[in-house]
Image (cartoon, rainbow, N blue to C red; front, side, top):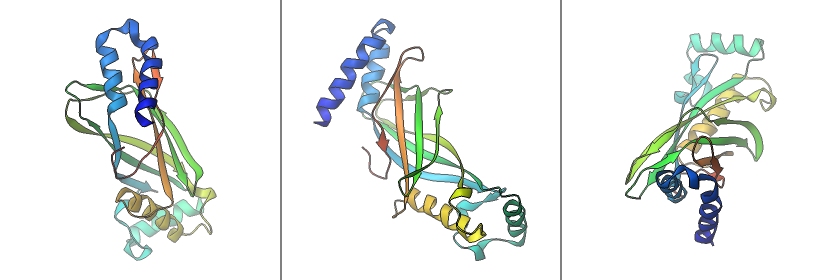
Length: 196
């Protein structure tokens, strides 16, 4: 069934990129055959604090606590991070990723979404390339008491997910292939540590 779905996508996409030439069509087919997985989630920051290395409130320095207190007083719960996605191309020719959409969910509820249409990625033959997906989320609506511990627990869920542990965070990626002028949206992938 999965092979049939890929075949259908390639056939539908062929009509939109056919005039672009053989190279574009080959890169489209190659992207459809690429496999994706979650490498990790890095550069998690809030209020100027690198939360990727913080596991508990007790790990915060006095300077961190001052920044956190200011952010909480201002109701600033904007968290940013990079979701690093591995793309594995097992074909003998390059694949091109022209854009992607992403959704970040917490307990199956949307938390952040966005897209990257400004950068083209070439995945070389028989290689794996890591692509950073920058995310920004205002977690103020899900912070229970507006406490530092709530923010630390949220970011721990992000880092646990990035390390392949159980987490209530999900990242969904929708890649685009073709050309910048005629791109084709491929099926959405829920990222995890296994290539799919």
